[in-house]
Length: 543
Image (cartoon, rainbow, N blue to C red):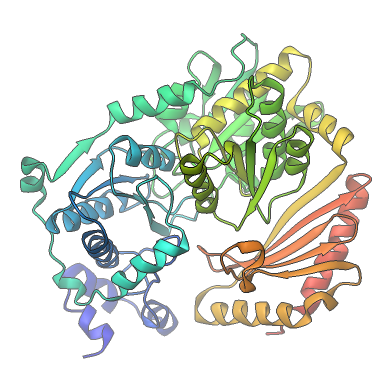
């Protein structure tokens, strides 16, 4: 019996969905491989088949996690589970809870939408052995995902993810994985419903991170982009002059008002920006479906300007050093290797240590957990260029709730001083030099796309340092540079302090090109970036 024939026997809905597919390429894509449980868990397009997100692939991942916990840990085990507003998220969360309960593992289950950082907090708050969040973050509506957290509330890093992957891969017979009865599991206490009390505890901790409480006439427009941020962000901004985008306030797994619910993309904030224009608001804040990323728009004399993740990160870094009292002597900030150096320059000027990690907030979370144990450094701030920020250690993942609070406070501070956030950013450039940072993505879907991405990375690796004329260093992170885990990332460091990097996305069928160019001004930096970009495209293999 082939894999396709086996899946036809699972249930009638699965059978009907698969039999209705007439496109052979689509069918091949669903069955040519299994959806891989990687260091970030699962993420993929929803649908029937082994290379899709569905109740069977979720059950397999959860059975593997349960086997890992029961084999590697003694005593009572428990797992916190949360989910976002995506289609099927609540069903996938309940599937995971039932599988865990059937394996004798207690579950703390949110039955209402909850941001990813709240799940990270809940793991430690309820003293769980692990955590699961059902989300595909900022991906398009067709996607969903499954992320696993350790007892410290940190996403699994490779050392532990590799162990879990081994247990997941050993799970067979997807249609025969034991599941506890939902009602009986709740009656017996194997599944315990959590919600408001945990969220309130999280928000109370976030409020302690406040840096500026002066009253201000700053006007804010906020959009949760149909996701989990609506309640927690509005609560944390209570008392501010806040207007919420009504059309995007309620959960909607189809994200019907946007092309993609990604605050990194300009058009995701279009409705909020139009509302801000009508209401004469000063800033726009938008959070993604699981409320771990945040985008910012700023009113200027020439209209609204959208900040990049690097720019917001630099502003937050500078604001923290301006406003925070009693910064410890061993304060440290953490950034990823594809994040601009301007934040690092700010931190170093103020005497803080700067650590660099691979892409993925799990590595920043790992540093927080490490320092919590050895006391070597005091974590102050962590961020990545893809609109993710974290201050404090209540969460061990990027947190758009606390970031939204600080962005609002930052806007209020500068408003009270007659400035916008763009004015503040220009002040940073005047002090530290101009940085032009941007990201370009090449979408390559399906089996052919995966092969093209692989061939492209091989081509860049073969060109090496010779791809550019003025490269001081060519860094191939697949060799495990600077004690970091091995990763398929290439980075080119230029003599003037600029750099460029390329890597395959770990969550989408994309090749990502990163550029961080130093220049005298925006125009010269953009010209230099274009020259670097063109060299990359010359090296790409032809179709």
